[in-house]
Length: 281
Length: 347
Image (cartoon, rainbow over all chains, first blue to last red; front, side, top):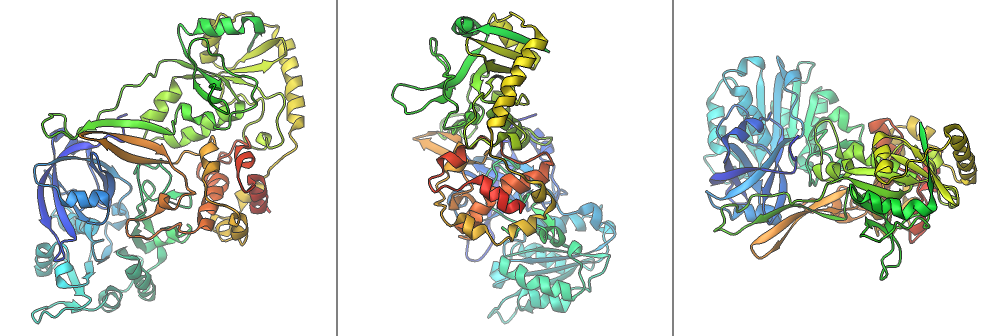
């Protein structure tokens, strides 16, 4: 068994500013040893530890999709020591990634079902991974209706804008993009908070419909009652949690919610599972 | 089943003899230190078998307070820049002499965390696997020892390779594993005692020792209650009232395994460290956003007791994460007593 703390070396292949306030950048990494890419075989919903020697490691959701080959992608919010350093890195720099870590969205259970993706702000990364995965020609027929409700504060704060536009144009996915507010007279999508748009646009909940919810705590707080009203059972509401992490492999002890470890037993839990744990997240 | 009789006058000679095949680790008090700690014994240093127990548990044999995981250089001119290298460390056979039975049991509990079906922590596992545990039975337990109500006890053999029992002028060494047998042979202690008679003698001392333990805990009701019922119990503010979140309990505990990972640089080179951490510290769970899911003292104190007495119990279905050594009771500066907390939780 290999040392689980040893990251795979990667080269920074591309860096893109992701939002108008420049607080988020999207990094594409390429494995310096091509065989490591096979070892880093992941599913949509998992995360990895980005490792910068001399700075430390940070757990970040994988934004690229298992169906995209040749690179892995992460969108990182500049907030602490490691993320600030990452934002100052250049293409060609060498760093490390450790993973894939944690569990994933329940792709087996979602087969043949309607999927409603509800995302807010910069928690859209693993949701992007999921959408790209579901829309892949090999996979699209495995799922019924796909609805996406995605909101940000302003149009300029939406992630992956080009892809959002592509998905808008397709007829096999229903996009409901929204912003809290905008002074752009040409804005042609929704205006309103995610819970409100969910209430208006999301399909009724039933045994064949699952919601995947990812966003800031305030969005989650007001979206869950809406889903309940729409008839979604707690075991059909899927969430992805964040907690402070170090090891990412269930050993260092800090990310637990009760007996579950967010890094290893999660980060994906159903609301039903979360209701049985102390909500320490 | 084999019992070896070791005459005390052959003790030091045997230890020295075993050095040809083993590194020796044991409790030892350095001249400038106040109390003994488990350390690698230099030639001529003997394990101190007179101290009932060390203040700091021997968990550091496999889980040092600070351990280098990797070394690296950030020098732009170096071909190896930003590549992490695990430093060489001596993992040759090591005999841990004089570890107390409950401290050895603690290794079995910590192993559940560091050696799993999915991941193996090589730092802990390599160090642990190099060890032969030659434990010393506790003939005279102290007032804070409640090991018999956990999965351990003063004569518990579960974590040991050899159990030594002090019989005044000699030791009876009960051979528990082949590893233990090999160590005794390497030390030249091969005089077999009459097994039946020796076991009878050992059991007599054991029964006396166990009878001296008056302090007991029970967790049968904790097992039956739900996590949420215990988490929402009304006594946590009272339990935590006096706590100063100093972390002494977690640092001294033989079963506490939480750690931090930190990089430390000197110029162009640096090291990635694994350091003890503690659920008592606010920073332990502090998000970079400023949010802290265990932001209050009460939440942190509850986490410690819930982890030891409920989460672990539910997760592994193999008892509590405590061996009853009593260190956290003896050294808590504000007299928080896990036995009382356990009783509250179990009531």
